[in-house]
Length: 139
Image (cartoon, rainbow, N blue to C red):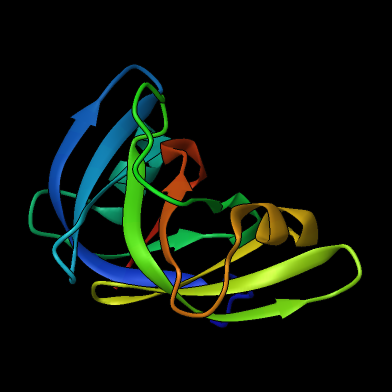
């Protein structure tokens, strides 16, 4: 199966915490960073997820926000440091490619945000992703 989701980073499940309907799944990405996904308990069962399971973390580029440094006092669990390796801008929107340990992410943000943050190739950034926007696929 092919997907249009550009952001697909391999990792290994380190913990599953089930609730009534939703579960949090902690994933150690191949680059060493930790990521949390909030998915349904049914999905955990359907995918057979348990500690040690190989997965791919999937995040749409429109769900990746960027900051110029770590952000404290924020409910967003996933903050991956990286470096901008490319920016493609249009009239209103921009696609920003970022290398992170073990992979690459793309963030779709406004052209104004690129300007306001002073982003350019080589800029250090932090990619922010809500755990509810991270999907998992078995590898």
